[in-house]
Image (cartoon, rainbow, N blue to C red; front, side):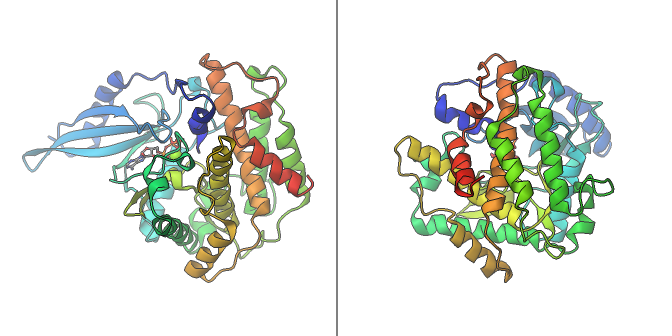
Amino acid sequence: MTTESTDTASVPQGTMQRSSRDAGAMASRVAAWLATQLPEGADPEVSLSGGSDANGMSSETILAEVTWTEDGVRGAHPFVVRMAPSADDVPVFSSYRLDQQHDAIRLVGELSDVPVPTPRWLEPTGDVLGAPFFFMDRIDGIVPPDVLPYTFGDNWFHDATPEERRRLQDLTVAAIAGLHQIADAEEVFAFLDEHRDRDRGPTPLRRHFEKTRAWYEWAARDAAFQGRGRSALIDRAVAWLDRHWPESDVPGNVVLSWGDARIGNVLYRDFAPVAVLDWEMAGLGPRELDLGWLVFAHRVFQVLAETFELPGLPDVMREEDVRAAYAEATGVEVGDLTWYQIYSGLIWGVVFMRTGARQAHFGEIELPEDVDALFHHAPLFRALLDGVGA
Ligand SMILES: Nc1ncnc2c1ncn2[C@@H]1O[C@H](COP(=O)(O)OP(=O)(O)OP(=O)(O)O)[C@@H](O)[C@H]1O
Ligand SMILES: [Mg+2]
């Protein structure tokens, strides 16, 4: 998710506490554990450092360099470690399945041509660092920045030519299409549809929605909000989405959903995706889930830029262009994305509730009277709701 990223738009000098973990002490424990995973005599040494500043630097993404001996030669290897958030850090999600992320990335690597970092060693128990983690290969590439949003200018994506931006956009849509073309997704990725065997609704999208609704209720109950945790915008969205269920939720339209499908979660080289990142919201559902999110995520940044009287990038990720590129890649014409954009707005809202609660926990902000004031996407979310009469 973008999580705290857009906070910088309103609090440019803000310092954001991400984690209470101590990277130094972690490294030696990880090295001892890696010694049990690597061949005897590998004698691994580990150094750890924070993730990239421009995109989140959430405590869950750590750069690692591992040096070990192989065939008598000592060599250093770059990795990225993905770690489950600590319960003490006010996590975004009520439950977190790092093993499922690991499996999803591995399966995408095996079953498609979509570039993902090869996942490596998984520590699923939490015994080593107090929370599960896994290693993945570190890929060379650049990401359109979230901080400040790439629509604000002064970054490689904004400075590119319209043709280069279009190339990036179309190749990103093609990568999403590649994910959606993995056959038998409903069986292969059944583990992502946790409530499949429980009575949570008849389709993957219904279960996705019910899970989101339960997550919102959990976020709203957080003690930090002192009983004022309900969001008027989210309540409007939930009621409208429920009553206007999309026609695209049909049995033939169930694919692997990447879940956080936005260009800020892709590493690029020469405007082509070289790694699709951030699988913590992966699930199952209609193709439109990822496409609506992709369009919505850009519109949030576009509206933010316009709020600061900047032109932004109005020619990027227009819904009709995304639909056309997707049809070109798959032969499938997807329907209107309005329902899915509103659903994206709902999920973003819950994420901002959680990151708001986290910032309050670390003393960085005081929670506003009105939860909706935490939503950096509120102007767009409200406009979408007004537009459908919700
Ligand atoms: N395998 C990788 N190789 C190289 N860089 C990576 C890799 N994985 C993550 N990164 C870097 O870390 C950043 C954050 O990664 P990712 O989006 O997966 O984490 P996140 O915790 O969800 O962050 P956010 O909440 O900001 O989206 C990426 O933008 C990228 O710069
Ligand atoms: Mg990310």
